[in-house]
Amino acid sequence: MSSLQYDAVIIGGGVIGSAVARELSRYKMKVCLVEKGEDVCSGTSKANSAIIHAGYDAETGTLKARMNVEGNRMMGKLAEELDFSFQRNGSLVLCFSEEDRPALNALYERGVANGVPDLRIISGDEVRAMEPNISDDVVAALDAPTGGIVCPFGLTIALAENACDNGVEFRMLTEVAGIEKLEEGYRLLIAGKEPITTRYVVNAAGVYSDVFHNMVSRKKIRIIPRKGDYCLLDKEAGSHVSRTVFQLPGKYGKGILVSPTIHGNLLLGPTASDIEEKDGTYTTAEELADVLQKSALSVKGIPYRQVITSFSGIRAHEAGGEFILGEAEDAKGFYDAAGIESPGLSSAPAIGVYLAEMIAKAAGAGKKEDFIAVRKGIPHVAEMEKEERKALIKERPDYGIIVCRCENVSEGEIVDAIHRTLGARSLDGIKRRVRQGMGRCQAGFCTPRTMEILSRETGIPMEKICKNQPGSEMIIGDGGAEENGSAGEA
Image (cartoon, rainbow, N blue to C red):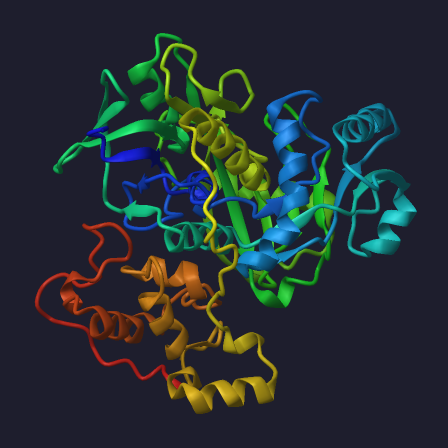
């Protein structure tokens, strides 16, 4: 009889860790996910381009190419099962000179070899007929209709909630400080808490995945934090383009994109700069200026005065440029999901299946008969027809009290975000689930009322409510929060 606490422990609660958790929850295994943040989707997965890539960019034969194409194919069905927002809006890769046509043709040929369907090269005039705001300098483009956009928070949280509903244990604010190899399995040393023992480890720790891999393997890997800055525009600018618009890839990736978001905003970015700090999510005036300048090369007339926020994300770039997936050569039972940069979000569902099947086979674990394949998301009153909204408010009056006016988020949505599976315990946790504070005023008016609701529903004192991690408390001193009059009837 094994004395180990778990069959498998996943390190990291981003989109990859959550996808692996969801797929492992199909099997008769005791699984735990540990996350150093206060919530899932609190690291790399929270700040990216929110793009589901078609799969033409990665080199043919690589795991990047395979996982991208398979993940893209899976996304539609997954969105139906788990009730998160996803749209195949298509993508365009722009070519600005006849001299660059060979590179565009090579991208097309690579996509065909990778198995991407319905690719075609179109003329500049065809591009402008599809997207009137595309630059007059464009001479041709690669059209990829299977490209898409998604809510990265919605995808990650849906995967995690479904995994939890199927028996995976989630431990937040649980930081792995070390890993020891046992005669059978591994011991995870947890900062300030009791250690955890497990037969298998899944290393899905993003920019820290090299740290954990190098604790157990003599074959070292190196993850380079690659920072990208973004600008997000108001929803009034969201229809400026309908497809995701790329420039021909360069040394550091796909260049500056211009894309609608799944929620109706317009997104510009990212830049690409290699940095030393694994958590260096700061923005710089220089990089943001670069975003604005380079986005204008692709799309004309972008209403830059409608930028409502800027942010940066960190990509986990592996020095060899490839996904590292599978069991480490000299560390039996230790499975990597390392170097998962773009197209990591697109690849997540396929990576989840790939690693879960590998681990379940090693464990000799059969599939559950009672696996729950579906999950229902939180109703959003802003997206409802009048009669549907009326019926919901009759049943739940708190869905008729609007707290966040910019995004039309009701008190009922905030309450449900707190009380559902893996419910929010911070302001950012609520924001990621129902978009409270993501609109034009960037939480300038709705924060006090949201704090009151969070305190009321959880019993957390107002002075202990955090933006995200402990240490990010919103109230300092004993003045308390003033009453906010921003709530109104729907």
